[in-house]
Image (cartoon, rainbow, N blue to C red; front, side):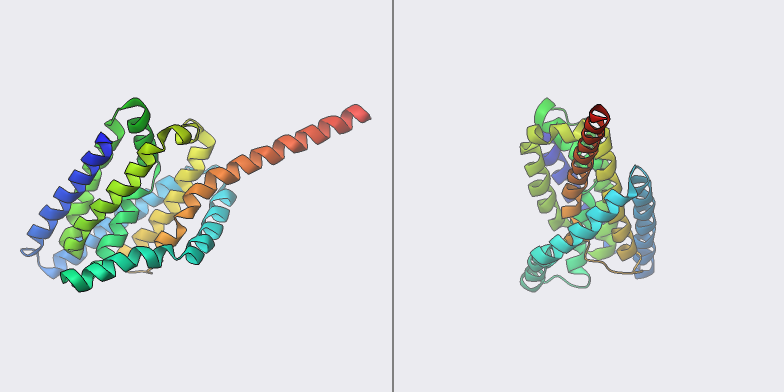
Amino acid sequence: MRGTLLNTATVTVGATVGWAASTHIPEDYKSFVLSGLGLVTLGLGVKLFLQSKNVMIVAASIALGGIIGMAMGIQHGIEAVPEWAKSSLGGEGRFVEAIVTPSVLFCIGPTTLLGCIQDGIERKIELLALKSTMDMFAAMFLAASLGWGVILSAIVVLVFQGALTMLARPLRPLANDPEMLAEVSGTGGAMMLAIGFGLLEIKSLPTANYLPAIFLAPLFVWIGRHLAVRKLQKESLSVESN
């Protein structure tokens, strides 16, 4: 859990520094910084999306994952806590977005998965240490633009990455499978594109509803392999019978 604790701390520190500095930053500059972060998020999303070897798997994962997420009310459930905090703690402006956006941004992507598995099994935190550094600066810029609600996203990082670390052994085969990891990366990239669109205020999407897609992508890879093996077996039996 050392890597997750470090990541939680860096997000907290980065967000706190960004929020403290926000009072000295003109609104035009905040908007400009947020747009820049949106562009970087889009670029990272494209990079991850292009790692996919089978776009149909990404498309199916996003479509079905979005339906499952909507039926489960994931976005609504995640937003319920920020809404409560906003009314109870006096959050203003884009308070809900300040919690939800960084929470999803910090928790998706192959670095999160691989880093947590490495931390849980090998007790090494190199990947999460690198991620922690990047998340700290992202949290700083987000908090400067969206407000102190970004600090609360550290709680989501702690819970989500802590759970992945505890599930490290069952998830290890996924981390050692390049094909599955490629589709997870591609699916995560599509979700990052959605986050980027939101930061640029092009279109606000319920990104959290797509979270089940991350788990569907490797499942579809496994199903595809299983069907391919069965097809080869049938063809082999057909040839032998002839």
